[in-house]
Length: 441
Image (cartoon, rainbow, N blue to C red):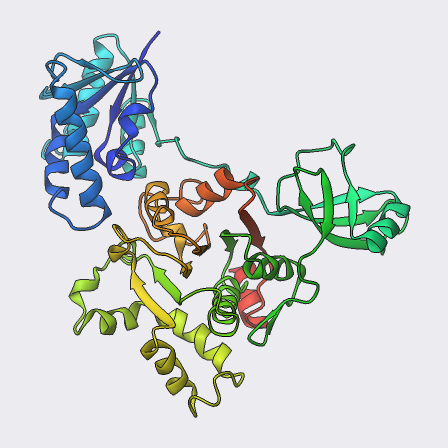
């Protein structure tokens, strides 16, 4: 039996192409949703752009027939705009003035008519209300990743003791017969001896050759920043390898995601001159405040949002780098900004740009939707390297969670690509106090 999917506004704002993801079933958009989209279309942020894109899609579909009666979708399904007023279908406790409640009422009405109804919304409270009234309500599952099964970027492989010796001698080891699980391109491996517990080696897997090779950098270091654990060691290998142009670093607070990325960017830009500048950006709108409400120029406004970046930058520069250019850390930071070797940019202004030959760091990427991530990554020009960092368990966007945010979606979809690398950092190295807080609070 075909299903009837009723979509909430937040689903279309989250993914403007959501209409095309329900196969050959019926998709219903209540009139109230279109009214809310009309409000969002005036915004200059991603919500506004997505609302306008949905409006254009509906306008195109309108040419195929009457939206109220239903028009065919490209995937074989049907789209219908429901203009019903669900009077009498809602309990008195629910206000009829709220669009969300009216959508639930429409779902109840269609269910009474015998349709196999599912209400799709990213609003948890709305799902709870719908469920209480007997309407099947679900989150928008497309683009979701099982966070408990997220690709970690490295694995432990047990091999024969003699193979460890072979690996140290030749720098490579064939794993053609390894069939315990799929290994991915650029996945780091901890090779362990099958008879000696303390005997091991670190390597990187090359899927095309079906072999593990020695790490690109044995003791990676960037501007005085060295790896404090195995995962940071892997991360620095990815950050310093020019062949890898897309890196995702996922981990909790204090694991070193931003610090490692920033140090590697400065090394590659200022010392090795592989890139024109380090471009750092963070999402602003999902934090609940708009950049325009802060006083001053764009750069002055960004100072408030970018303070965590400056904290990491000051830690790196405090080790004595750029000592010939400035006397104290503040002057060193200002030198980097004035010379345009370091640039801070709001993600609001990334769209529409082409960004060639830059070391681009997107911090707090867990607050971005998969659609926003696609927009950002598609800005990369020739020679640009993009690093996404984030903690999927610290999300400020009300319609995202650990499984549906952009960074975990990209990490899962990109795994196995030759130009991509990922590492999940699990150990906090900020301080003993920070590590304890991460563990017990």
